[in-house]
Image (cartoon, rainbow, N blue to C red; front, side, top):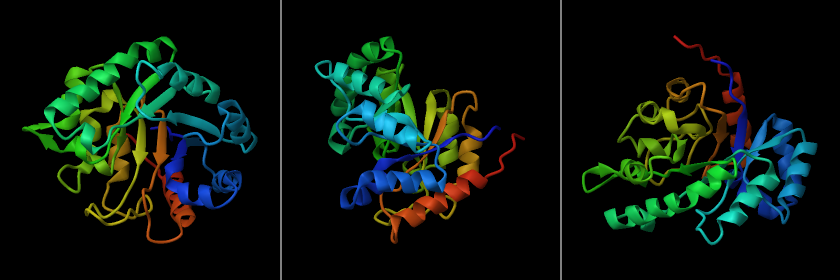
Length: 250
């Protein structure tokens, strides 16, 4: 399998971005070796794209709030300004905790997908642990897909394990036709404990990458929600691990 380019979700370094000049932080990320970032900061997508390009990186994907028919054009315009193909959004607990809430959320996605696709963009749902829990005997992610069959998934392989309820690589294999973006996250798989740099926790990252469709998976995207130590250290260790992986198709 050819190596996939490596991006980072800017949520990982949110505290650093707020504490200092954010473009100093982005330059540190570029210096580590990352190919891209996921997200957008600043007032102008076009200016952010230019600044990132000047650092030798690109923008892998635009991550925003789930749009509605009223604001989907702004969502599209932002993605176009960033120069991306992939767009991403996600739901939170109240929007997924009952069958009725799941149905409302899925219909919200159905309402905006045609406009996003007509604009030449993809749209993926990013998951947390709750999409891989059950509501009335069925996985939340399966309920979403039943109603919204055209949606893609930005699969977060740590959360997809739902604290050990599943093997992450099995979830990748199960939804591999929908996965063009993979959030690479690692950790102890224990609720309430912080994440670890990629390769230092219990997620079998090589198995997850191998389980994906190599013709569809475009980006590996590092994300740590929290880390017990200097975040940039965890970011660099994650990049070194991923960039050093030698994965061969059996």
